[in-house]
Structures are given as structure tokens and as C-alpha cells.
Image (cartoon, rainbow, N blue to C red; front, side):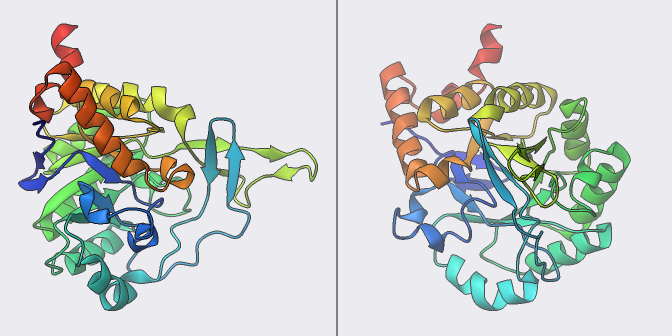
Length: 305
């Protein structure tokens, strides 16, 4: 029987399929469609220390083979999370990971320190790559000095598994993957959305209130796959692949390119049960190819190049 389990930073994942932050809410939104506990993990929607209202509407727009979003990290803050959300997500029999955001290094550290006390949250995904906020976010993830500073500070404050989410809006993704590894990250996840724009030709205005937003969906898959492949060759820590995964074959491509696990985002809007389908599809691929262990073909493409 195919063994889909893997380990990242000492955490065991029952399979490599995770729900991506910002597309899966807090998990309970999908309870009517799937058993969330079947997944390898869920990455909760982005959380900040203080509540955020997000960006003005309109903040989503459909594009060919994808979508643009400029939600802006709307959330109720860590106090609300601890009181109302944490008791709910704690019941899932899977790895619940918090996506952590801030405007300053101090914001990130304060939030990570609070989460460090939550027993049922075994890892955080340090989001230094969000393109939809004016302060923090991508400003950290596209500057090597700032990236190093915030990762180092959070690593000192946070004792559990640290995953750093990288921005594709850089010249060399391997530089930021290496910085993450050097500063103590247990893993990197990539890619976050690409910076894009859409114009409504009838109103003669940008489709988004913020003008630009994050492009996701199948349109970005070739870019994401290339960056995951580059990052996986550059570092020894596990890489989590994200970007345009719509089918089991897409997921397998990322694993072959070096991803230890994958995250599914935009596809969940189209098919709320896609994550479970991917698990079965990966298992079928392994059985058909005679792979007994997920690690048997992780990064296999690099062994034949």
C-alpha cells in the first residue's frame, strides 16, 4: 500500500496535501464538503496581531486561467482567534498551521510569541510575501536584508516549526530560500501570488480598488513549478509547492520537481472537495508506478537530469 506520509521539521503529515491560506478559511467552511481531518494539514487564513478590515471592494477579479485578489488580510486579530477560532480548529485530526502577518518586525514577533503558547498549532507559516498590503508583507519578502531580519527575529521568539512563505516577485528565488534556511526556518513554501492587474474597459477603471493584486490559479503554475524546482535544489530543508495546482497530475509534477508537500488554493473555489481528490490521485499514481513511499519520487526529476 502506498505510504503518503512525510515529515517536516519533526511534524508528521499523513499525506502531502495541504489547504493553502486565504482559500480555505478556518477549515470549518469546508465541513459540508469534506472531512478536513483527511488532509495532511490546513493553513489558516492570514492572521495579524490587531484586527484588519482589509482593502475596499472590489477586491477580487476573474482573469483568464486564474483570478486576482486584493483582500488585504482581513481578519479579527489574535485575541479573537484565541477565543473563538482556536477551540474550533483544535478538534481537527490534522496539522493546523497559522499564516502569520505583520506590518513591522515587532508585529511578527508579538504574534509568533502568542501562537507559540497554543498547543494545537504545531507550526506557523511566516508570510513575508503578501502583495496586497501597504506595510509589511511583500516589502519584507523582496528585500534580502529585511527578510533575514524578520525571519531571525521570529525564529528567536518561536520554538515550533517555522515555514517561511516566499514571494515570486523577486529576481532570484534561491537567495530567499537560502536566507530562510540560514536563519533557522524548518521549511519554505512557495509561491505566493504574482503581482498583476486588470482593467474594466466599460467603467474605464482598474478591476480592483487597489489597482494591483495577487494573481493565482493555473496561469501561474509554470512559474511556480520552476521556482519550486530551483528552491529545492538550493536548500536542504523541505519545500512546499504552491501555485495553480488543479489536478493530481499537477501535484505530482511539483513533487517530482522537489516539493515535499503541496498546497491547494484557487482550485478549492472551483471544487471544494479537490483536496481529497488529490490525495486519491497521488495514491493512484504511486500504485501505478510502483512507488511504495512518497519519498521515492520526491525530487526524482533532479536525479535523472
